[in-house]
Picture 1: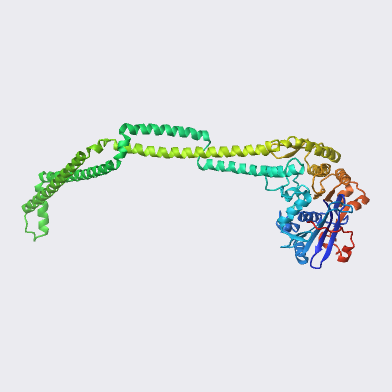
Picture 2: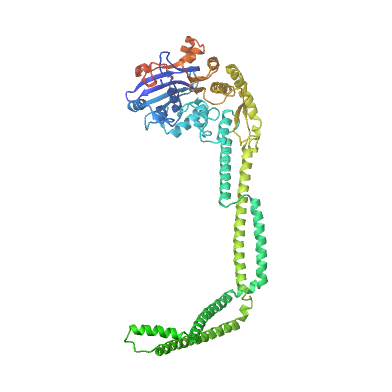
Length: 590
C-alpha cells in the first residue's frame, strides 16, 4: 500500500491543522531558505508522526528527547490542550480507482486511542491489523513492528544509523524470521518455530552452565571417573570391614552389641575415675606421712614460740604442748585419708567384678568383634555410609548431565531440521541464492550509480549467524552508510515489486544531509523511477548543493517548514475546505 495523505487534527475544534498529500517517487520534507534554525522546525518530528501511525508505542517521543531526558514543553502543552490526533490515508493504488483504502488515526494526547477505519483498537490489535494490511500476515509472525523497521527508518529515541540490525533486544533467530519473510525465502511459521527452538536451546545451555557452577562440575567424563574412584574406594573399605567380622552376623546382633558395649564403656569410665581418685588420695597420704617423719628444727621453733609468748603474757601452754598438738593433727589426717582409700579400693573391686561378669555373660556377642576393633569397625562403617552418599550424588549428577546432553542434542537436531536446507525445508534448499541474485540485480547497480561502490547482499543459512550481510564495500563514512541505506531500500522496493511480495510501497528516511550532493541527486532520481514512495527529510541548502532545479524541488516537496511555520503551527484547514479535497472514498476494512 501507498501513503495518500496525512492530517494533523485539532479534535477540540474538529479542524484540520495541517494536511499533507503524498505522491509516488521522492517526497521531500524541507525547511525554507529563510529559516534560521534548519534542524529545529519539525522535519524529523513529521517522520516520527508516520512512525506513530505505524504503531510505534512511544508517542511521547514526538515532544520528548529520551537521550537528554528533556521535553519540548510548549509542544507537549499544545498537544494536550488541543487534544491533537494524526490521521493517515493508505491506498492500494495511487491513481483512481484506489482499490482498498484504509484510514488510520492515532490520538497523540495521553490515554488517546488507535483507530482503523473509525474502529477503536488496542495498540496490539492495531499493530496486528496493520500486519495484515501491509504485509498480508494474519498470524502475526513476524510481528508488524519487527517488519516495519525496514521501511520506516525513524527512531523515536533520536537519529538512528542502524541498518540491517534495526531491532532492539532481539536475537539472530528473530532477524532470520524477518529477513526470510522479506526475501520470501521460507515460511514464517517455520522461522518462528526455529526462533523458539533457538531460544529454548540457549536457555538449556544457560541452565546447564548454572547447574555445573552450583555443583562444581566440569563435564560428564570427569564425573564418570570420580564415580569409578568412589566405587573402588567403597569396595576396599567394605573388604576391610569384612575382615573384622561377619557383617551379616554383626548386623543381626548390632543392638545387643551396642547395649553391652555401652555398659562396658560405662563401667570402664567409672573405674578410670576411681583409679584417679585413689591416686590422688595416696599422694596426699604420702605427703602427710612425710611431714610427720620430717625432723623439725625444734630449737628455732622454741625460740620463735618464746618471742611470741613474751608479747602475749596470757598464753598458758608450753612449747611441748604445741608439738604434741601438731603431731595429733598429722595422725588424724593420715587416719582420715586411709579410711577414704579403703572405701575407694572396695568400690573399685566391686566395679571390676561387675565388668568381668558382664564380659563373661556376653562373650557370644563380644566375640563377634574384638573390643580393640570396635572403634575401627565403626569408623569404617561411617566411611562406607559417606561413600554411599557420594556415589549416589555422583550418579545423580551423571544422570542429570546425560539428560541435559540428550535435550541439547534433541534441540540442535530440530534446529538443523528447521534451518534452511533441513528436512523440514527440503523444498527451500538453494532458494536463498535465487532471492539474493534477484535482489542484488537491483542493489549493486543502484549503489554503483549513487557512489560508485559495488556491494552485494549475502545470505547465511547458518542459524548460528546473523542472516544477512553486505560484502565488497569500499568505504564506511557516515555519508556512505546513508547512501548505502538508500540504495538498499530502493532496491528492495524494486525486488518486492518484481517478486510480487506483499509489502509497503513506501520508505521513510530520517535526515540525509551527510550524503554528498551528487549522491543525493542520484538517489532522488532513482526514487522517481520506481513504483514506490521515498519519503525523506532534507535541508533546503542540501537540495541546492545537489544541483536539483527549483522547479524539481517544488514538484517533489510535500512539506516545507520554517521558524514561522512549524509543523504544529500551520494554517488551519476548515472542515469545509477539507471536504473539497480530492479524498478517496472510504471502504470498510472488514
